[in-house]
Amino acid sequence: MRTFILLLCTFCANLLAAAPLKTIDLLAAGKEPVRIVSIGDSITGVYYHSGGRRAYPEMLQLTLQQLYPQAQISVHNAGRSGDTTTGGLKRLEPDVLAHKPHLVTIMFGMNDLVGTPVEVFKKNLREMISRCQKSGAEVVLCTQNSIVETPQRPCARLTEFTQAIRDVAKEESLVVADCFAAFEAVHTADAAEWNLLLSDTIHPNMAGHKLFAETLAQAITGRTVSLREVGPPASALSHTFAKLKAGQPIQVLAMPPYDTLIAPALQRLYPAAVVKVTPWPTAGQTLAQLELAARKVRSMAQDLVLIAVPAELPLQDQLQFHHSYSWIMNWSLSFGVQQWDVVVALPSAAKPALSSEERRHEAFALRLIQAQDLSMITRRTGDTSPLLEVLSTWLAQHQP
Image (cartoon, rainbow, N blue to C red):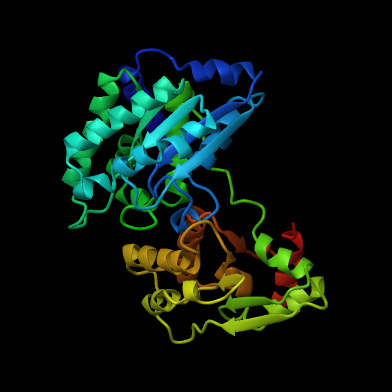
């Protein structure tokens, strides 16, 4: 289904494109570094909703590198939370043009639609396009994802701004990466699958950012590529291990049973390690209560947060489960770029013999964790080792 969606979006983009992008020739030649800058709001920037380590600009670089293995590519992320086209214009020179890009991708609208008149929005886009082109950069306009309706952001208002982006692209003879169309194609085919692209009502998770990057890459190159099998970054515990290597004490917030196991497991690798553990109780807690408790995590001084939601919590209301589980992870992450490590343990790591209902819980949780771009503690099939051994082996495998 995703291939069809991307082909549809490429067709729409090509209808608006006056000519192929010269950037494609640079990528294909592989003789000089190709510089791309992506400007936008929090949907572009690296924030909690996509795991705090990367967003679609970083995934675009991976995508283009797959398509052009010989190319030298750098993609700079110039996304800023809360920004609008007005703010983007003010910082265009230092955040975009100073990097001397060959190609600039522009994705705005989610915040503009709250208070910017649509004609001002279009005027700002045209000014950004003009200034980028005068600097020698090509431009691709991007529509944003579709969203859950809220009073602040009515879907009809987003649709109006989405069409404004398409109209400006047509007037300026630009390629448009129609991410809105890609998301809506998923929504039409399967509303539950569309929901799994979102971290909250407006922000896509990493699954959504992969669709962004695939859509953008196809709009730029006309070629299809999939990021579905790309896992989270390998450095799951870079912050924790850096402090341990430096001989510094670490603070861990952990759900049971890992609250009693993480210190001895880390001390197997670093015998002199000083590990202070704060338990995060789960006994008798509902998923909603765990979500409420997660709101306090950002104010705590921790180096590692270890989430282990019990398997026995029911999966009766899938939308509510998605909401609460996602926000347990969201609140456990720093607001912007990850400042501490966050790892999620699957229930079967601690309790291999799950009931059929618990396995449904785990299967759905697995998708949410993968969509959040977080690393997971798992147990190999058939492994009957004590959990301390499983955890110690996992930690050893994830040393930088």
